[in-house]
Length: 241
Image (cartoon, rainbow, N blue to C red; front, side, top):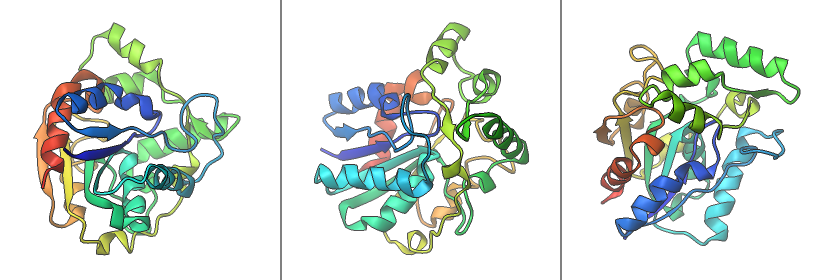
């Protein structure tokens, strides 16, 4: 049995993992999907990247979890890199699923195409609380292009505005890049949330991990909903010793 802690991406909360957690349980594994600080509905959105990290560290410590395979999706990749710096002794492997692996000293926004940087900064400035409400058109065409329109609208309704500050906080990842914790990268080959090519997830992000295990599957950025059972199996493959 493996123990997984699954860290969601932007615009999400921990409930996004519910279908995957169910399948991991059916496969005989224990999985948790905590919600990062500042994420979800009706919560304080004034948070920093460190607040996001601290909320995951606190969850793992309070539940006294050890020998953990810690997975981060999308923005969650930047979070698990920092979590690994704080509690490496509790972690067995890090798994990045189409996730940011920022260069040392960069922020998450630095790792995005200029069009996203401009869009997110503009939307946050127009909001009352420095958050970004992801436009449906962007999400539909690049995050969940493999669903029918009704399903896309249904899943989109579960999103919540994303605090911008964690995207713009510069990250000191010196210790992360020195860690010897084994790492894996799951690549959904139809994931275009970052446009393929110069800005794509793989190999741009994955190669920064040094030695790592590559696990590939079909699917979009929202494979947790569209291919939950397959994703669960790939997570097990990525996490095993």
